[in-house]
Length: 256
View 1 (cartoon, rainbow, N blue to C red):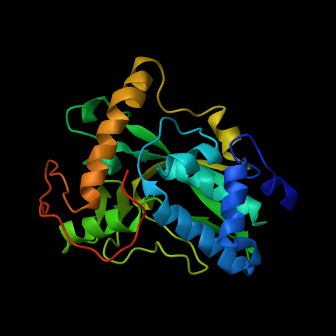
View 2 (cartoon, rainbow, N blue to C red):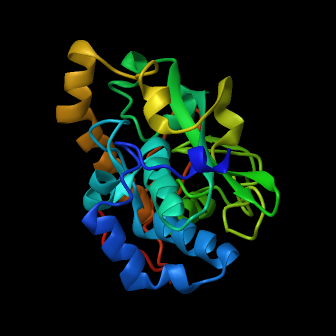
View 3 (spheres, one colour):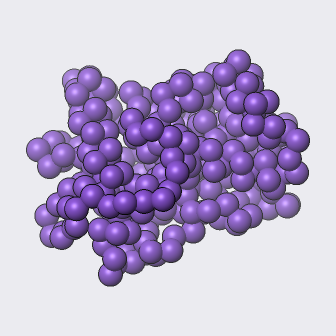
């Protein structure tokens, strides 16, 4: 039964040279199981920056090469790393309300965005139970910028966050569930052995909208995320934010 949650797939291509090199160079296989999970989780959370790739169904090695990702693509990379480290894991698919992306999606094109956006998190088998990992989506600088922009708020569903505990969300690996977009969920597709199976039947954008997203809109969104990361948080209807860049001691790789 466990083997199906450890197998390589076209998307979870953990035998790829770049992924194997990462695992070896970081010495993750020498760590105890809980620390292996934490090391892979922290890497995907903060060294793979929050951003928007060309497609949801990218192989893990491509996400690693991009150096950035969102819920679905970061999840694919995390699953590949976990399986490469011998940690059983599976995919859980959802949709989220598009309001969660407001402030990242430019207002000019926001009305054209799908009402329901494909979302996912990773579930791992650890200490005899399945744990839900979603808190890796926003890197530390993006989260810190949102906390500074909304110092008096705990509930936020915008800018890539969907949480009722903005100032102290459960995003760090401590051997329990982690979340940062959970409150935006509006439909549950259930669990799948791998993302490949899910994306065979569930895709987000196609046709002209898909082309426009890949060639223009996602780059626009990534520029907005880059500004958020340095503390310039766009104003959205009904929201007041701090537009002064903030200083931070948090460490992440160079912004996309």
